[in-house]
Image 1 (cartoon, rainbow, N blue to C red):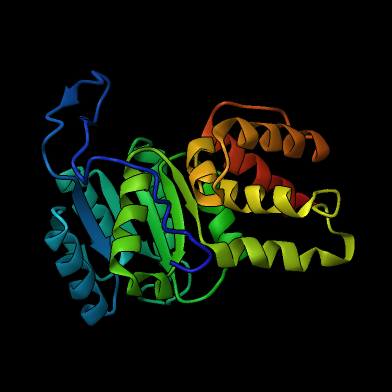
Image 2 (image 1 turned 180 degrees about the horizontal axis):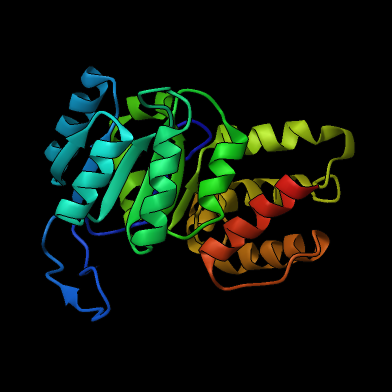
Length: 247
């Protein structure tokens, strides 16, 4: 998946321990398949996604063609993951994003992946800034099935995934006053992989260096960008993206 957004850190498969909706916070059967609702007004794409996920052992419990149907499915099935097109009927502007915001507010533990045909920085940042278990991908990334499934699994497991095109857009928009100019070429590589949601171990495997070397690069990056150190991968991603957005 372009710019290595495949996120090949190891995991056991698409079945994860889940928590039931509500305050009891009980962990349910870890062997149960991940339950997914799809919201996409393009029927062919939606059916294709559903087929792809089901072949990969996900349980697609509902499909919607607009935001209202999506919210009804979420309340009915309480899925683990919602995959949502940003633009849906009736106006094909921000219906999907609006529904995603409402789902995040009412079901903060639900994983959300938004899909877009184009890089929409403001829309992507709005979602990513509001919680973990979030992702933003261009629809063109779906063409590599294995990479797409791995990305979905990472989001369900608690990670954040940012499409490389979004990172490039943020950097390009600020090239006149590039906040990354202080970084070495290797630090830029590490930062790019951090923005994709990779752990230090995953970055090390990608760059063929030790995890200790990656940790040194991360400390240097956070210091040069005047960002606080954190052991939380998601906070690292949000810190980097927020920094790029606000410069």
